[in-house]
Length: 246
Image (cartoon, rainbow, N blue to C red; front, side):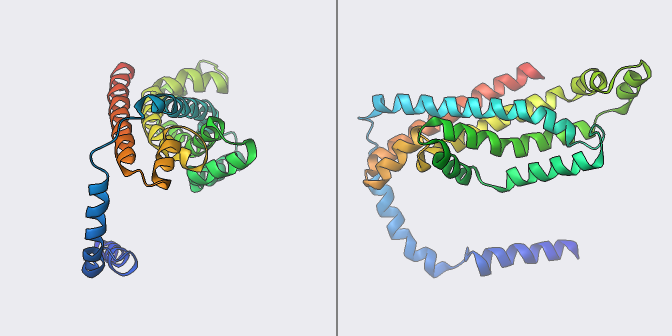
């Protein structure tokens, strides 16, 4: 019964609300799509040197945003875990905060921070950092809740303080999961940071939206290829980091 209900919801979303199987509408869009793709080739790399700086800004935004998120997520993850939170009030407040941060898309946060601190990489870093905290701290908290209780009990029996119990009884167990979460979030933030430029937060996304606005589709395809290559490099480097942290 549950399976049928889920299937009905999925079909209703795809067919009735999204129009995913609207054959007539999809058929009408194919010629426009073909025309757009045709205009994007061959890619124009004549401005490649001018993209190196924005691409570096994008990479820096993703690294800085992820680093800030991980630093903030460690204490928030401890406070948002049932077995380490000091009391239910703190637990529910932290969970509510994390839910709120996750519910606001980083693009909206980018617009808010651009309005607050101006254009440039800083609003992009802040948007990525605060949005990432909502997800990273949640994963940290769930990892802490699923630790083996034996080392924790042993630390308590040895007379350790609550902080010492967390440091010596919990963190050694969850460090691999925390490292994997942080690395994965960095991969995500690099992709997300390319969008930050569209709201004035700098980076390669600013160059991309600029080319789109003046309909330089050959430059658009070249920028997309450059982003694809950088994403591939980031993914390969993150895989290497995961092996080192296991």
